[in-house]
Image (cartoon, rainbow, N blue to C red; front, top):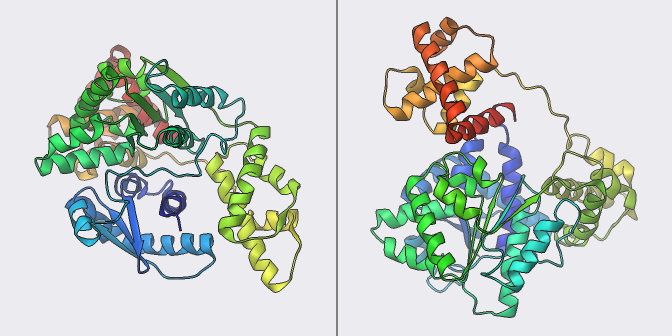
Length: 456
């Protein structure tokens, strides 16, 4: 059992489960930042960044993690077992399994993520070519390589393909592949333990440094400072840097200009949504692997792949999930009544509720206030209350701005929504944010990012 592959499946399932719910932010903050370490005696051991991180996951997410791991492993192996999940910090895990190879600091790359298994189309051919060039000649022309695009389009695949290719040529290559959330968590733990020097040595001695989803670093000052110095050290030493994001550097809120400029030193490679032909090719490439992990020997009609690929708004991860669901349902049907292949009748039945047409979101004043609070990691009682410190005042003013801009509420009604504030206070706040939006690129990026989340 490849725990890295299973963990990616678990994350995909949980992400779909929490999407557009009040727990979506908690999922990104606490679950995605965990690291899979090892499995022993039907127990999965995950590493948390610190005690607070550990406690939060144990209190809120342990049952659903155990249930999802059990389902994912059962689907992959065909063996139904109930797995327990243990959350520990780095030091605790070192006591439990000091000789395990998958301890923190050791490379975690999915061996299935290679250039050969990456399907190239018009939407990603430049990013693929740039990644190939980096793997063949690291630290030179394309340094850094910045790959950006939406969720589930192959950014992680390309990054890990670079790492796998360089390891194949030189097994002694020092490679760091890390998500931004894990980087931040490790830094916080290093500061807490007064062990920053070890942290710096780990990241500044890499031959290849890869950071996934840099957009999540934008509100963490110490992490941005550490990334800046790590970038400088590696770049001056001629080491290769690869960064991914869901948007280009200048659109990442609160990312300082000095970091933005460095990320633009090399090459920018955008990945767009794949076209129809590429989606069909991706499904054909993924089909043998999905049949393997689901334990299916049934043939799949080509019409089925074309039907799934016809869903224009779906990313690659959704397409894979749809194909997996069809195959799993066909396996159940085959147990009752043997079938030779998976046809459109089975497919349409299996996916009847998978590709749900998006409903029109009701953007209420309460929804806007709640989203702004979650974005800035504050409570609604904070923004409605009397606190006037900058950490609360700015989100409050931004909430007022959006309530005026998006809803039909007047200044007095907006004031009533935010703790009974005077209409002149609301008017001043709206004018202030509008002025800053027009004059500050940082504020413009911040407002645009929140606006996008409101209408997602």
